[in-house]
Image 1 (tube, rainbow, N blue to C red):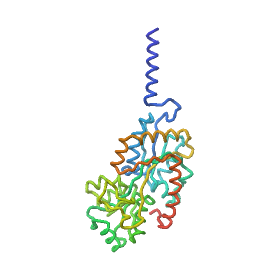
Image 2: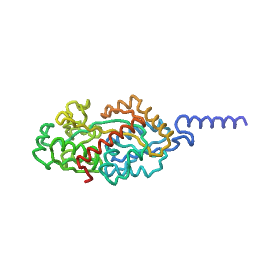
Image 3: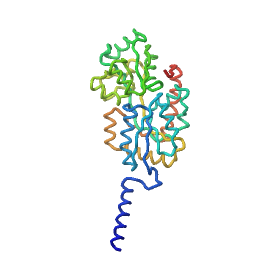
Image 4: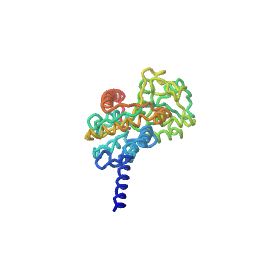
Length: 325
């Protein structure tokens, strides 16, 4: 009898240790795996940062965190798929400001309202975009690029991750502000677009720094300019495009969202877990190596940020006439 009691006590202790050391008690959020829908193709900044965060969040939450890519239509396909899921916090959206705030102005059938249909949880990081060309491109710097493209209207097309994405709008802005005429070639994500630029099927594209950095360092792409207001420390010899076109800026930021009906307690718990992950010095070092500037917006700060930018992008899209290709 004493042996049986001791055995039962040990089993109970093991169970309690398992719960406290990882898996949560039944009924405590999250008590099962969490999916993260990424509405872009694998290999781009949104996907790269999502996978880094998922790897770190799993141990923090005590549950597997699984990234699911659903690209298409500038993020519309994945975002609509996310909104069809139960809004209980077990499926989250990890997306970029371009997919969330620009696309609804470009795609009239996007069928989502970024302000009303989502619960902001946390902004994670911000990155510049880089104007990249194939190494065989005749122009070797921004001055030569501007002169060449301006004197050859509609000769040099640019690739993007899809109509309505930030790298599409940056091409529109470059054309508008720089007095250029370039045709747009949309792809289903930045990785296939970048592959065709490296293969010289299309001469150029705007790509986020984390997605393009390795190829730039390997000499597979040539960086001509960055979209941030100032030069980036990882590419100190690459000028800001604003040095040639005053006022030209356009950075990408990425953030977590839940559905509008996600319980407030679950939002708070997820936000707390994300902040703990972001506080890890090793993660900051990883972000620095990728060119990602860490952000720590909470739900209220993220809501205010997207509200302001949503209306700014409305003006830019309407002025440019950007539309699905």
